[in-house]
Structures are given as structure tokens and as C-alpha cells.
Length: 133
Length: 118
Image (cartoon, rainbow over all chains, first blue to last red; front, side):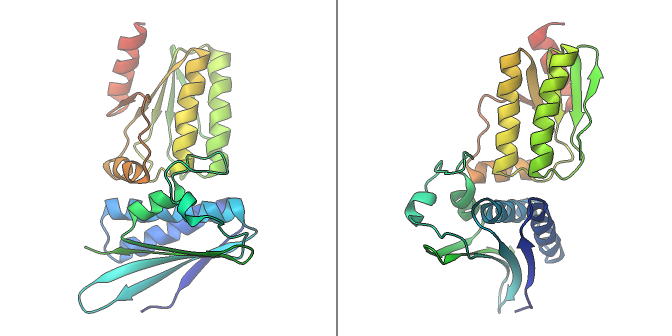
């Protein structure tokens, strides 16, 4: 496991910064262009959620490697309001911000592994992994 | 950052060459509608050949600008969507139905010409 690199999301432009860094890491790891686009898009959705719903949060990247595979872990952490009903936000088309509601269910489809932990009033942690093929 | 909008006869041409952040996208939406109004253009081609990521927000802005332009009486065609972008949009669950598209700028202009007959 490599040390984490993180991007703090406070300004709207940080969304772009996070997805560019994620794409660079994915490229260096040898992901193909389609997976690079999937990873960058997933990061963009996660970073936008931080920007829209919380004061600040972070997107961190970690490369995991074991015997037979290598993966990129994206960790999204914030100390925002938390998600009241996780089942609801995982439904396609559900949005409280007037967006397309494609965010979290979309990220789940773009990535190979996806896990949300959230506590109301404490914050939200999302971990998503893409494995290199 | 502003995305340049070029006028060619009755059409407007836009080639998005930069990384689009949310503000740039919103600004572009406004700029394009104003430009349609000022120039009286009947057709618009937005070329996305150099765009390597479209997330749900940018997709919404693009889909909306097509509908808004349509309300004003101008037809918009999106062109040059990359394979990787098409695949991620479908993964995201975004189908951009009712949005006219074409393979490249040339095909986009042909499509406008056929539909508007000018």
C-alpha cells in the first residue's frame, strides 16, 4: 500500500483538481482510457457532493496491491450533515440539489467496489475501488 | 474562463477545448443563449472531441442548453463525443435522450443543414 495523496474540497475548482490528480494516478498505474474516464468521473461526482453538501472534506487516493491485482482506492471523507437515508440516495434519479440524481448510484456502477458509511451530524465516508485489468 | 463561440453564416460553432468546471459550464450556457439571441442563429454545433470527462453536472448543463436553445428556436447538435465519455455517461445512467448528436463537426453541420434546410 502506498501513502495517500489527498485533495481538500472547498472551492468549486477543487472538483477539477481532484479529478485531474485521480486521472494522473490512474494513468501512471496503467489503467486504459475508458477506466481513466470512469475513475475521473467517479471522483468528480464524489467531490461535487462534498462541495454541495458540506463545508469541507477530502478526496484521498491510495494504490493497493496484492498478489495478483492492483487497484486504486478513492476515499471521500467529510464532516458534513451525513446522509439520513442511504437507501434513498442510492436510488437513480433521487436528488436534493436539483441535479440529475446520478451521483452515488452512478459512482457505484463506474467503480468495482463501493461502500458508504454515514452518520447524521457526524459525516460521511465513501470508499470506492477500481481494479486494474 | 470563457468558451469561445464562433459565428459561421446562420450557425454558431463551439469547440470545447478546456477542462470544464461548473462555473465555466454555467457561464457557457448563458453566453450561448445570449449569442443565439443577438445573432439570430438557427443552428448550433457544440463539438466535444477534446472533452475527456462529462460528469452528471456537465451532462445536465449540456442537456439543458439544448432544450433552452430549442425553446428559443435554435437547433443544437452535440458532436465528437469520445468512446470513453459515451461509456461513462451510460454507466452514470445518463442517456441524453432527445439530444441530437453526430460523429464529428462535419456530420453535425450536415445534420443541421438537412434539418433546417438552409
